[in-house]
Every structure is written in structure tokens, then in C-alpha cells.
Image (cartoon, rainbow, N blue to C red):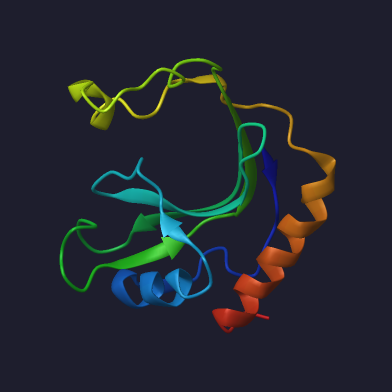
Length: 135
């Protein structure tokens, strides 16, 4: 994990509006959200594992699934997951559990982040600051 200090830290937004702005530039809400916090993820690469720019957020006034919820953004960071090879190699259409068990546990959830993508991560944070009016 590589933290990237940013001007968006501590900024508050309505979650719905924030999600619409970030989706337009390639972000999605990560699947590991809870009722009071979550992450926006930008997938940088997926050739050898997955590399993301991850932007944490937490609820300021209510649960994330409530209408009109305001969230506060945290410090963005680069994250690399290296997944186990072979887990999904033999998935067949008739395998009913494949649709539920489509992701394996990371072999290394804090894998070394590829150096060639670190500068891109900083560029993405600057773009994020500009889009959110924090540049």
C-alpha cells in the first residue's frame, strides 16, 4: 500500500453526486463497503494481480444506503492484490457456485506495487483533485 497525500482528504460530498462524478472518470464503489465506510476504486492494471488507486470514504451523517448521505474522503492510496493462480481456471457453465465464488482470496493482499504505475497513481490523484474542485 502506497498512501498519496491529497487535497481531497477531509472533503465532504453527497455520496450520490460524488459517485456520479467519479463513475464518469472510471471509478467504481469497491465491493468491500459497509454501512458507514467504503472505497472508490480505479483499476490501473490487472495483468499480474490487480492494481488500484483506492479512495476511502466514511459516512458523516447516516448510513451509506440512505438517501442524501454525506461522506468524507480519506487519503487515497495505491494497492496491489496478487491472486492465486488456478482457482478459476476450470470454471464450467454448469458449476452453480461459480457465480457466487467468482473471486479467490488474495495470495498476497499487500503485494508490491509495480513501480511503472506509481507515477500514474499520482497523476490520477491530481485528476481527482481537479474534478472535485480541490486543485
